[in-house]
Image (cartoon, rainbow, N blue to C red):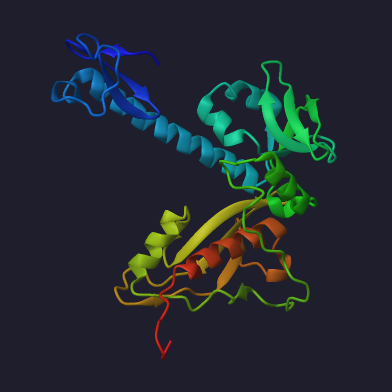
Length: 288
């Protein structure tokens, strides 16, 4: 974006996401100013740029949220869609360096580019740049990636930084030998908070939904919608509270046996429960 006139002697522009001014006359002509003069702060062009910057921030957050949804649910994404949104810097930032899988399960690599013709450029585990034109690709949840450790090591070598947490996302593998009739997990129950409000606030700040007495997250796992839920206390309770057990339900609200919970729903549910438990009040001193 270029510089815009903001009254006599000044121009403004967005520089690294913030409104910046420069002088257009005098000895300081062309020099960026460390702060905005009062006349510039109150100029309509400055206000428009501020509102545009806020919109860009919301747009970038929306792109990250959408890509995160595709990844968590391992949904197939049309290649032409990736090509269409790639020129947008916000979309590109959210998508770049994510692990994608083509129509062949062996076509795995870090996404580096998407062309107008619908061709994807990826770096595979052999360090080679390959070009693919599948109809759709998936951005797999890390628990579904058989070569996850190799991908993590290779990402470190490449200096990969993912805007959407994928290969370094905390994952939990479903253990063997779960009780046949068990419907909940209590591993992260008992995390004490001074107030139910504080626990609910932590849940929402982490991106989870609070509904009734539960913090929840919904994912698609093996083609079906599953909701994980952690009890956080009665909605209008104003005293201290504790994290409760973790359970899962299907799209009709029926509680699932833990044995029937898929790998993605299991991992994401445990991730939510662990994150809520991590914010608990920790007692210090001899009596802790």
